[in-house]
Picture 1 (cartoon, helix red, strand yellow):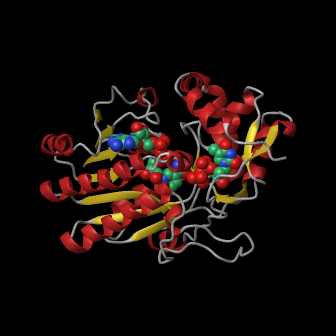
Picture 2: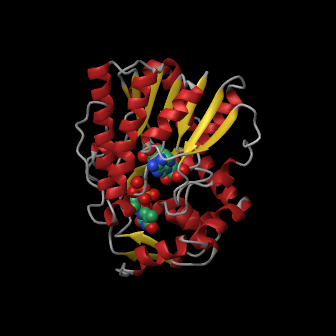
Length: 343
Ligand code: NAD
Ligand code: TYD
């Protein structure tokens, strides 16, 4: 089996590469990544010399480059993680999200059509369903919940999902789609809530909570997401969408307080700042379908996963300190400099 994994130098993609190389020693994994600000080659250093692994620096929007790679590799499957993934950045600059997340997906699927493929898997997000109200804990996202997006990021991901389903219906492309809730774990870029708060707390910097911090996210350990995708690409039904989530809903403020407690830092570091524009209230996945059809269940409890994650950031300071010492500082100053303290 030869699998092209796009976005494999990013957070979830790299965890998926590690999972696949370990679980399937006879598979070839070809990682395609443009190495944007979010991609980091040092993340992949432990597998660079693995004879079953190849890294290719390539933009998924580069049609010629993608076709050439298919001619060289004759992949059996493509798992597409490559994306612009940060909501705040999409609010500042939507265009690159449309380019990578929509056009890039189309280019990959065109290559699959041209050269043939056993499976094209699209890694999507629960954010395509929009949000749920905070006062209706009985509501969840199901696979047939209407697409109803809020941010340029979620809209670009939803557009890609629609395109994937259109390629299935129109051209018979053998696709699957997974929509997962918020992930946490090793190698997450420190612009996202959990690693940002860990990095700031360790530096005794303020912890910028948007608004009152009452927004709810449904957190899943990254390894459980990777196992779910592994199941879907091997046993999932072509043409189907699978929701992935662990029924682990938490308010942002509670996550930040938990990080303070684990790192023995005072909660006085917490600063409530101007809310995100169009901020989604609550995400909550109903994972019944993937459980019933494929037997998937999350294995890592949040209380254990968050400890493992904090420990990983403590043990791997070099990885994230390198990241936040560079261009990230400009991003941080620009993004957070204009936010006002609200309480
Ligand atoms: P990430 O930002 O950490 O990584 C994205 C990777 O894609 C980076 O390595 C980047 O260099 C690469 N990339 C970006 N543009 C590219 C392009 N044009 N060509 C090739 N490579 C490119 O993102 P992540 O958090 O690992 O998310 C991976 C996927 O999972 C995304 O599709 C995202 O929408 C989806 N997802 C993420 C979460 C989450 O909580 N992080 C939850 C559900 C779904
Ligand atoms: P994030 O990690 O960006 O994921 P997403 O927006 O895709 O769910 O943010 C998670 C939640 O944390 C979201 O409600 C926004 C909030 N948040 C903060 O309060 N402060 C921050 O500095 C960041 C990055 C996020």
